[in-house]
Amino acid sequence: MRKDMDTDTDTVTASYAEGWDAGARRAFRPLTRAEASVRDEAGDPYVVLHRATGRVFPVEVHLVAWRDRFVGQWVYDESGRRTHDVDLRLLEEDRLFLRQYVERRYASPEQRDLAPDAWRLTVEVLPGRSATKKLEERGEAGGSFRTLADVPEERRWHDRCGFGVRAVDSSSARGEPACGDATASETAFADGEEPASLWRPPRAMRLEVSIDDLFQPGNPFPIDPWEGMETAEPRHIAMVRIPSGRLAVSDPCDKKPRELVERIPPGEYALETAVVVGRGEYGGERFPVSEEPAVRLVIRNEPTVAWELALSEGDDPRLLPDGHAYGFETDTASGGFADAAVWESVSGEIGRHYGQRGSDRCTFISDGVLRVVDEATGGALVTFSTGGDGTWPVWLGRSAAGDLVSVVVITSYL
Image (spheres, rainbow, N blue to C red):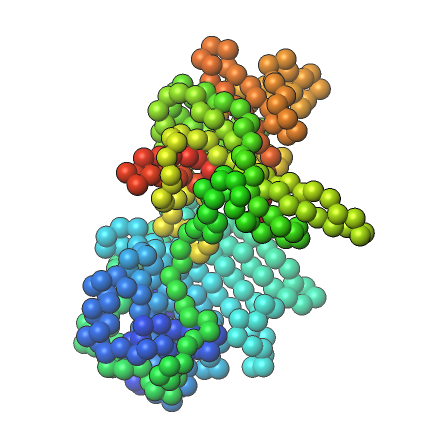
């Protein structure tokens, strides 16, 4: 979704760099056109800067990262303030999808770049769904307003060839930006100088903790505000029978569960929780502390060498905002591992247990943990507690051979 370059000058030139510092609004490591072409072919991130004569800041900065299936467009005013953000995702080999559009309007020339009180319109788009828009205004009549947005199909999809170094190379004949061989020196970083807020492509959430270490006793594992925290023996919760091989990890009260795309061999698996112990202090008194920061369903007794986000039908990691993840949502501060084929039966018993009628089929295992077994198949649901409401990602651990080893949920805000 290219914005026309509004400028009072006749000449707009394009140049290249490895990166762009959003805070300093300066290019990092200028590139020649040939060097940019090499990065383009390899899928490495780089930026294209569109400059107008007489302006200190670029008119637009295009952020290109084909390996990460991302192209971004940042539009700047003459004061160097970002007025538009465009987030495009490469969902097809030759077409980009408009994932998000942001427009900002500044109240005065003195209002700073990306001021949180600037007028802002955000449009979110997903394939096959209605787009939504959020309008944020400040002042006495301000507020936040969310509604549906009309984004026709022709504005959702854009040709890949319209972006990157090859697009600039072919555009001069159309009277668009001419190509330069280096970024303007007055805004580039000096040799040896490191940027403080260098742009990087958006990526889905990744695990920041060593999950296997959590389930091995004797490993230091700091958790504020406690002292001397280290891992203890994992606590066995229950066995979970999954005769269909279809695994659901979801809020146990969901009418329709979040079933994972990943299939597991039909069988019975141990559900266990990591245990971390240490000391606390309050009012001059010291006391023992115990935390349970993760639960896992053990599929194989093998070391884990890689972790990946567990997906359900319709999930597409290419569409995730930076640092986000898919997961199950809960407003009961709980989750459950279950055979998806018997979910309706076993989940209904959980609802009855917490309702006025109660349920004779629910087995109380420990605080916050219930187990229900489907009488016809033996398929089970076992609940666990989370650190609160919200969305909780599910992670798949794999062995060196790529086999599924465990299914994990981090149950606290580590």
